[in-house]
Amino acid sequence: MGEEAPEFSQDGLDEVSPIGLDSKSGGYQTATVVGEKIFVVGGSEDGEGLCFSVRIFDKSTGKWSVPTVLGTKPAPCKGHSALLLKDRILILKRDSLLDDCTWFLEVDTPFVREQKKILGTEVVAWSKGVKGDGLKPVVISGPSGVGKGTLISKLMNEFPNTFGFSVSHTTRAPREKEKDGVHYHFTDRSTMEKDIREGKFLETAQVHGNLYGTSIEAVEAVTDSGKRCILDIDVQGAKSVKASSLEAMSIFISPPSYEELEKRLRARGTETEEQVQRRLRNATAEIEEGKSSGLFDHILINDDLETCYQNLKNVLGLNESSDVSNQTSTKGVEIQTCHSLAEEDQKVLIHYSSDGLEKASNNLFVLDVSSLKGGAPGRTRGLNVYAIDTFSNKSGIYL
Ligand SMILES: Nc1ncnc2c1ncn2[C@@H]1O[C@H](COP(=O)(O)OP(=O)(O)OP(=O)(O)O)[C@@H](O)[C@H]1O
Ligand SMILES: Nc1nc2c(ncn2[C@@H]2O[C@H](COP(=O)(O)O)[C@@H](O)[C@H]2O)c(=O)[nH]1
Image (cartoon, rainbow, N blue to C red):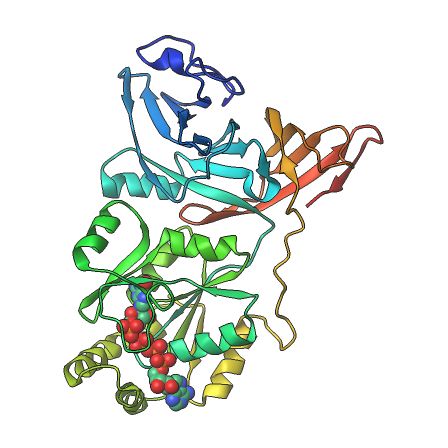
């Protein structure tokens, strides 16, 4: 279990503290035993607090290694607690707002195992826990010129608080009105290839002669803002996302005819004749695959724009007055210390102290992790948190 301290002394290991204790070096580390390996989290200072660095001690070889770390790590804090939950370590940050205190370091999830094979190194992946189920991200795919961007713009304009756009990276040159960081992160091939090797992307594809990709950070940024993430990606990207842990809904936008697609692509006037030809050649295979492969949950034909937009809203379960406001009831509540952790039946008991929680006078939380969804790369959804009032022996939904 995660609370165990290493029961032996090896070079460097004597610096490792068991959960909840500051190490001799003044840094704060936790050591979690997972089979033959000990995952040591934390320990280094960066001026703002203690950083979440990760090292692994292999008991069978007696060697330390530094893994490839995927996903965005938590911001530094004054300390943390750790508890092993099957294939991931639950990390609870001290002195952190409740919205930012629950993190997972995935050590043996399917995503991590897959990345180990691809990268050929030890891999761990960070994922922040978000309360409730949230809504699945939406992948919108279809041939170039079919109207994906037009439909997405309409959706984002009508529901600005509900949806957030995943800003992709691309090596293609910006079009006249495109802004870096808004429409795309424009980059060059060697930088993007380096970022791919470093595991920064959820998916990448060579599309119409250029590299495109969805970074893990792009999806996390939208999820963190409390919005539903929309990805505008090609069919190859949609396949990769389906094979990932993102659990997205996928929608294929089809043109009413090949001739109409050609007309729209030319009328847009953003590509040279050679590029238009290339995009049209690729469209045939994309439409074939999109319509027949069973890859997509929904196929919509974009003939009349307004009709297609209404159909899109229907499959997304939207009606005209359903834009949600971006509320987070937990803002301002701060976990000051997190003394102890225990796990039983996928429920984690957290002992904490906090100024902001008058009701939870006994200082106990139950964190229900029985229905976790998603995970790295991205966010882990499905967390439920309850405060327990030991005086009245009642528990209530806190979040
Ligand atoms: N239903 C429609 N009827 C007529 N024109 C449309 C319709 N939908 C979109 N268009 C027009 O078609 C052109 C291509 O649309 P858009 O740029 O949204 O395509 P896209 O699928 O995002 O293309 P790409 O994949 O190349 O980014 C635009 O000029 C847009 O105004
Ligand atoms: N696999 C991915 N495909 C992407 C991504 N971002 C955009 N795209 C697709 O590329 C084509 C061309 O886009 P354009 O802006 O050059 O016209 C289009 O089908 C997009 O859906 C991505 O991150 N990954």
